[in-house]
Image 1 (cartoon, one colour):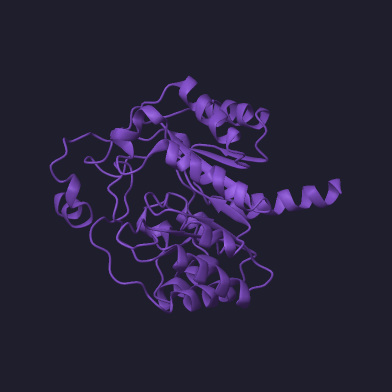
Image 2: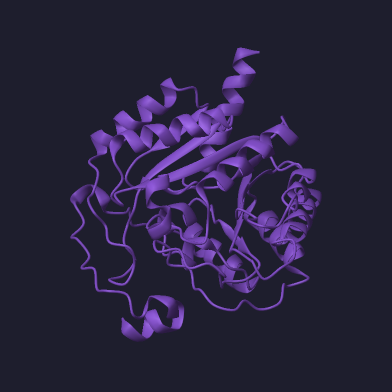
Length: 310
């Protein structure tokens, strides 16, 4: 474990050891062994693509890949941030792949995806934070897959000015940026980010393109108070965010931020009910909920509901 931490997270080597709490029964992820899973894996590997499913050690990978639902992570596998909760490798990234847009577009076509989620590492080393690369990937993916809806999960583009607008110009169907946790925990959990800067990004995304759905997510179990979670919901609604995901924080290693407690499924249900009462169009709240978990199914339901209403 020590060597693994050193290679993936050199900034965490000297962190104190935080023992990992035993998972309760309701955290157990579903196991699948299907042709679809191996088809997804083959397409990803042969295309030499990176997925957040693998890099962030997502507990839902077998379930999602069995539905051909892989979340592509662009701009490499190395992040310039050092968030205390994240298992994505940190360090100095490599140069951008000029053919990544074509690889992503072809993979989406091979997997016959109706909805695709595209995320990225933080690239603070780039002048525009990678927004032009994002735009290129969206446009090429849509050109080759005109019937596929596109959801992006972006960095905060902190200190990058209006570079995020390049992504909006490409008209993704959903613009997602995760708020991750409550403001009081930002210094420890998300030290490279700023709570109100993330809120502002979401607010401005909606102001600049009303046709795009905005989305955000929060983890629980990091030491937040119930009232703080409710305040985050209110802040997100004030920023006109449409969709919200709430999931359980799972501690990747003994050197990551400590898990304070596991929330019971009933608590997630109550949080979901509160979020819906506040006006979010879509809410996913469960122990294993992640940003892209069931994103394709949820978006399809929303579209169907709107058709029925009209």
